[in-house]
Length: 498
Ligand SMILES: Nc1ncnc2c1ncn2[C@@H]1O[C@H](COP(=O)(O)OP(=O)(O)OP(=O)(O)O)[C@@H](O)[C@H]1O
Ligand SMILES: [Mg+2]
Image (cartoon, rainbow, N blue to C red; front, side, top):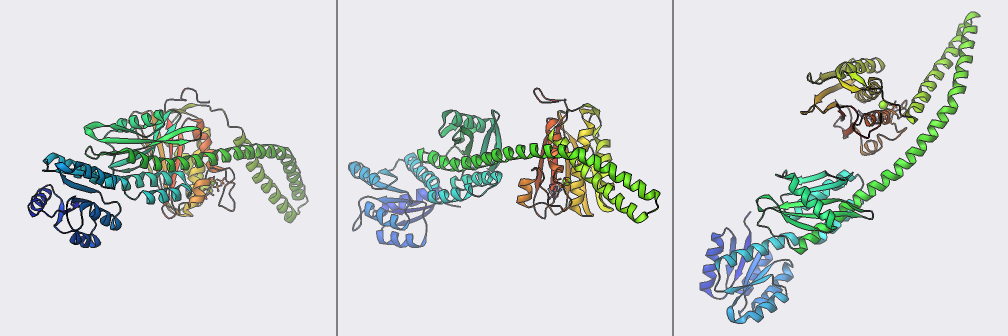
């Protein structure tokens, strides 16, 4: 879209020359010799920049500027003046003009000042709106979404080419959200982010091909937790104001991160306590349950011997309920004490096949199509098959349960190009999860199923964690669920357990 320029000068010759030059520079030009006409134009059109002659009557350039600012407060105005009246020009700037132009015009100066005025207008735009947007965002949960919104808003309001929010995790900068076009150079963005974090204040650097990179640190009480970075083409010159604007956004992102950390801390503290309690309770239940089972079996046999089939059936029901309880108890106990891994060369594909068969046996799924694509190049890896079987089984069961007997489950394995890790993806086209479920998915005992124990996901994650891998879940209501497990293939990483 062409930028709109308003020119007002009572000297017809100058007006004509300016109009031609600016049109040649690609602007959409509105030119007039009369102040009242300019005011009329301003009621129906928005201008991006105005060039006003200082000496005009009955209304001079400064008065016209003030009248125009009533209509369009952020319109950048360049006051045009002859050499002799430089003091008045300075006064014009003090009263709200963006800059002044001296006549006769020097071509490059004209171009440069208009460009600067346009860039400045862009950057200063809608600051109040940003503030409100930011505050709303910071109070609305789910960190990833807030960071996405911050990145998006940063791009939209600054018209930057791209924006990335980095989070500092274990001394490394991890991109958490981005908007705009993909960056041609990540290292340049990371360098700017690091500088801003070190300095504790917004920083500007010149990146490859003269692009300008502005970074603002995300600071919470403990110190910096990341940085918000934007990148613009070289011709846009951010000012001190722009840095301030970015600092505003970054403070919103920082609040989002802080809130999430605090919630996680609280949650993991509570979970750990809950976990300990559950293990103790399970432990206390284990022996009496074993006793109960013995008595029930004994009763069952005795009633069988006396041919009291009806009572014997009742006794069998008691036994099987006790078995169910005992299974839950042993799962809880196992979870409370994560096992040592026993790694041995393991082929993943047959292991996954086995889990699919086991899961199908447990969950009726005749009408469920299971598509498998295994990476033939995947080598055997040093993994604990017994533990992984638990993880896969739980995840496949979850998928089949979600499908409710109908739909498609896709299982894919893919070895990384460097063969250092393998990714297993389980995609089901079931109902997906709402946000609440998604956010509590790994909580112990969180379940939405009448018969569920809410341990499956927690177990799966702990097994994957023990292997030094990563388990992530993407899901939305009506869009199915994707579970991804990335397992390192090189055995345990240095410092990891097992
Ligand atoms: N593939 C999936 N699609 C939809 N919802 C899922 C999926 N996987 C998990 N969930 C949701 O997450 C919840 C927790 O899962 P988790 O496996 O931890 O427990 P559960 O399946 O309810 O019980 P169990 O301990 O028997 O596995 C489930 O109750 C379900 O609401
Ligand atoms: Mg489950």
